[in-house]
Image (tube, rainbow, N blue to C red; front, side, top):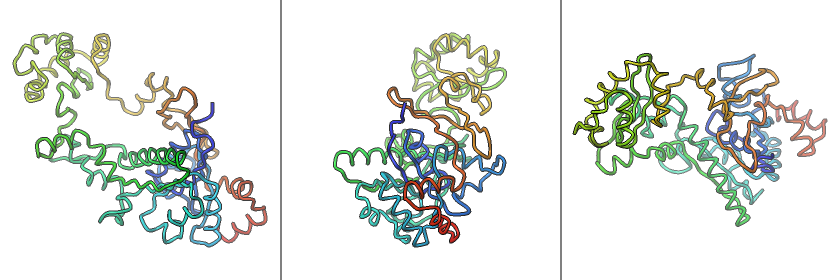
Length: 395
């Protein structure tokens, strides 16, 4: 089956993570993504470790299924090449600091004159407006400023970043959503538009119950480890050989859970009879549950809880995740073969379609791998002209 975005042409001027993650999603869903990189060095993340046979695993993980061309955008001939690509494109994605594209003469106002149907997406740290717009941004800084670190960690004295670069990843996801919405608008009106997504905005958007709690109480939530602020037990508990995640979202589940661990009388205790009571008295309840569960290993509890439909799960490391039968069944780790690095495992595509196909469509490209195809076949530059531009460092 073809991908749901088959026929869509995307000019990818992004680098490092937020933008490349967005365009990776578009490529997985069938779009032709043409990654425009600097001659000689390319995307900054090509220099990020770890390396496999000299190729960056970081770069390869988020640039799969794309094509690579090299263009010096500061050279007039390079700018002309990009404009030629834009004339035949549906989408352009960039994550330069605000103002950079305007200095290059390639901002949305300019490109809209070249192609009124173009959807132009800019993914930045702080967006195209506001007092922080010109600031540089990295995931750690945005997680800190965006409130996520203030609610993550064991306690209020140890604010902690999320292990994955969530501010970059969510910016990529929201940018992809914005592009698809703008394409639907174009389908209705015939007109493209600009999509402006900020990493900081995305962190605010995913704060969900933290903002709700602040709005309701006037108090800023603090980190509380692995437990939930409004549901109990909804935390990690100790078996004899390690931790399990347990989530009992209602009183009936809690009663079943207690029966299974040999503590069937706990729900009759006034402190623990209701969810509100269990949340308020978690300091007393948690050691009782840990004591009961520590009598048996994780495998025992997993088997018992699964049979009783108690939501539970192991705390998988990446090796355990890679061997998980559900992950394997859903093709969420797949192997691609890079022309230099060889076979490499990458995350699969989490969106499954019934009438079309989203999939990893190939490895990340070697720098400039598609220059001849795009500049020759697509733009009609003959071999002599391409050689001349290469000699001058334009491509």
